Image (cartoon, rainbow, N blue to C red; front, side):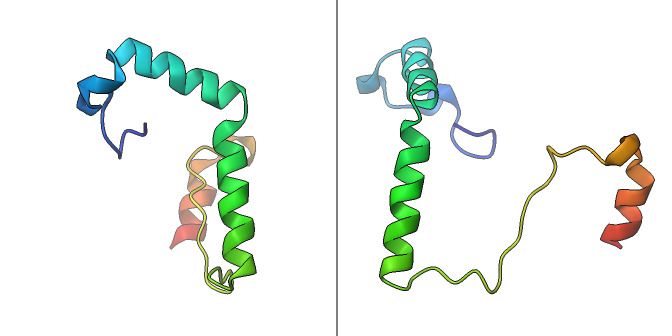
Length: 78
């Protein structure tokens, strides 16, 4: 669950408490289940020609600038 998605408190009660849902989420992450689902969807998308990477964008907010220079990154974005 991302900060831009729903919060743990918004998960329907039928799935358990927020701590239970969070535990299941962590287990699925550790077992690579999300990665497997993503790769299967990706392969399927290529197979039916629904994926076109000629136009794509990447969010790199988690990748630090080299040598920690934020000004260099800001200059590139302009």
